Image (cartoon, rainbow, N blue to C red; front, side):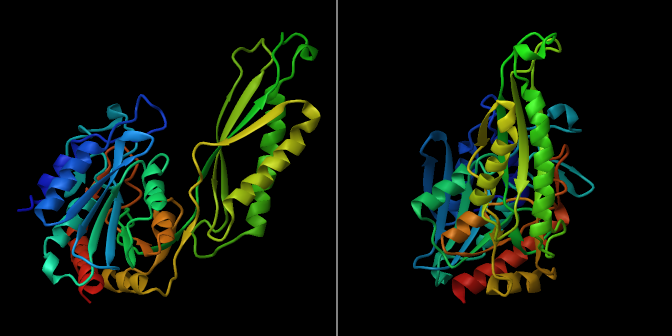
Length: 381
């Protein structure tokens, strides 16, 4: 009764579900959830739609096959990043196959995971399962992670194990860095540029702040190191600067946006507080005022026990040793619900967020086989 993989993937890609902090780009994910919900119900899953409290056009979907406690969760997000169609060689909302690569927005990150998970689930009936199989589809992972935060706030789903199907090339990922996007806003006062005394130049103050940030970054690298990561230290990227409006006017306001990625074990709130205190100190002689905002609540670092049963089994079944990544996922939120969580899925992060994004067809079969093994082990035993 389940459509084939290509049919399901085409339907999901054709339903735009961009999440963005820019309202004009942001789209609903309900059409994606409708497809998934129909297919899951055809397989005998009980489904629950969870609209987000502050955004009813966005929702999560929790689908459960079988009864009881424990079991396995297969999780993924339904949203994509924004797209510049002019940079694509094909329509990003239509799947185009070339050289066994399935191109389309979200094929890799990460709509392609859902048809694979459904095909794996279709091999089992509710009567076979001693513990439930749950499939979770979230919203807004690419922007605020509002969907995963809503799951945590509601305290569900509950299970023993969770696989998040982000593109890892079938490497079991047991840890990743946290992410915080931060705006540093300095307010001075404007005036005619012919006389600096007529105003207070926010760009002059921002120059001091940028030097302090570079020193702060260097100090973090000296204090914290994790050799399990390719980039072993925390990172702080000076991403973009917006300031002033004319060369002959003293700049009254400057905003610097930074990307801060911290290692597992680091306290994000504490680090940001230290950073804010140091910036405040460095600008005090300038007379400018500071506002420091996070674009949304930071995503904490994630780490699970390397010797855990799920990590070891996924490594054995895939033939890939466990590893770490620098990109963020919903791992912290599912782990906080009490599940042993591993990030593991088809495709490469190198293709994600890129024009002509693709999922290689040779990743589909192995992923399905591994997910079937995981369902058999954790839902049947």
